[in-house]
Length: 420
Image 1 (cartoon, rainbow, N blue to C red):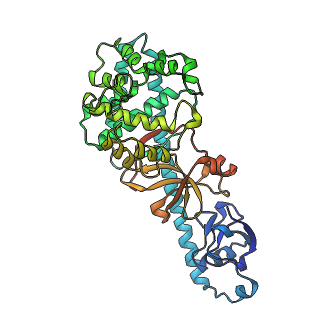
Image 2: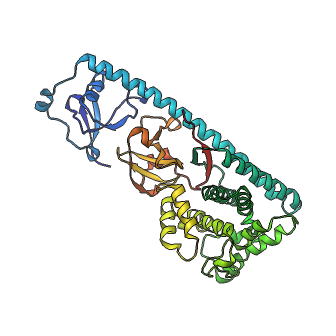
Image 3: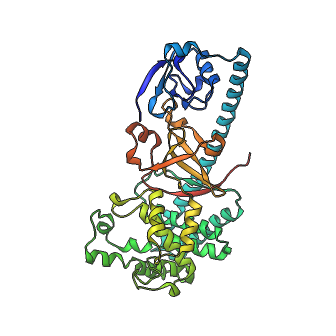
């Protein structure tokens, strides 16, 4: 961040990047920090009774005026200023209403996600003692998610909160299921195939429950014997599901083969492309993406942006490229969970992406003058802004990091965007 000066409002000029020293509710601007684009904005700041503001020289296109230059500035008429003030107040009011609608949509999606996660946790708990009940409940959950997917137009993929750090296997399994089902829908698959994908993805890591807990919690690289044992979890999972006699074959194949690669280099059997079903190839690709974001060794975790880049460069030969391409296209260049810098110079967190407007995600924006729980979520298209770059969360200043609260666990769920 560049050097900031506290300067008189008389010295402001178009191109200065300013931060207003007043509460967000006490001015008509959408943000408390922004780049001045017209002289009338400066005059509105003066009318607010503000004597001086902060100017960030690093984000400014121009230097503040000196005293002589300031005295030569031509001001707008009072009528023009009044009209502009009214327009800005109305625009801000409309944007606040849009923000409130966005928050309601996000809250509704969070509730759906939480219910699905609770159902997932409950049915996994029943698998050993009541396997038929567990599979029946899993089929119901998948059918409900599929119905929501197929009934929804204008789909939006949302970033979910990660309040409970203890349920990694449930978050991971539900995340892989939801993303796989979304991609299956985008690929135009039939409902039965979408449900088969969802059911297999929900249970794909169930075999890990039969591995030693100390192995699953280990943060150091696994020894060769440990890795060999870990590689057996797909077979262990399939053995568990045999307790439920009516578990669908297509879904069971996903559980058994989700770590196989098209070139035969995967585990546990070293199968090749012609031996792997399309649903299995899809879940394998999505599982690898989620594992890049949430590896067993947490220090190796990648951001969603970096994970997609890695997939694009290193997945050839191992994963189905059509499905990888569809996943990258669906998540967008900047997937939910990405930390970004905007063309305005502000930092933000990508919260959601509309599958029909992938280059224009919704961004939670850092504004030090707005309380964290009221942080603005902006629509890039509506605000005329763009993303300049994606950066790792660790690159943020501590105060910005705490405000944006980048997720340690990247979980997605879908909703339907309101059209009004």
